[in-house]
Length: 227
Picture 1: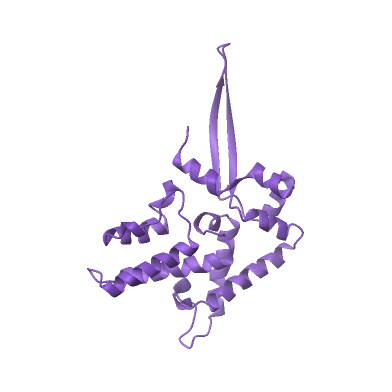
Picture 2: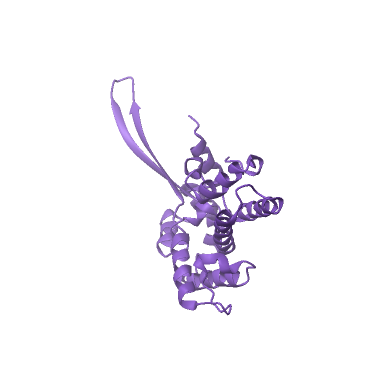
């Protein structure tokens, strides 16, 4: 039987067995790469309890678990298969910081890790970046970003913070300028952020803030389709 959440995951993610087949590696090797934090953990896991019955009036129960990864896992395996885990982590964090520093709206990120003079507060930034690294390794950014990479992580962080700022400052009835700004914010958010699985949508950053905001001002046509 088809289910919209299962369809979403099967369409947008790669199951464990497919990963090892496409990457031409063993299951042990993939697990080793995950354990070493050279590849993120699966973003979704689907567990099925199955009962087998026969005409002999017997039955047997079995549980099957399938793990699904963001498609970027294939390139990560190719790039990181023989890489030192600390080197990958260092490169990842450096890329995050570079994307953050170069962003036009960088002061919105992470509760503003920049001082009044524009200088980066390295202690605050390192805490935020380390947290992002952990989220990445857990497969979380395979769920909520389109490309599961350093660019999308920063883009999503800043986009949602700008939307929250807009919500706080908006008029009760949107002016034309505010409507234009909201349309731009919607486009920016959509460049880096996934739809989320249907069961997650309402409680996701997209559902809680952006979808709700667009509906409130009769801009339903701008809401990104769930699936």
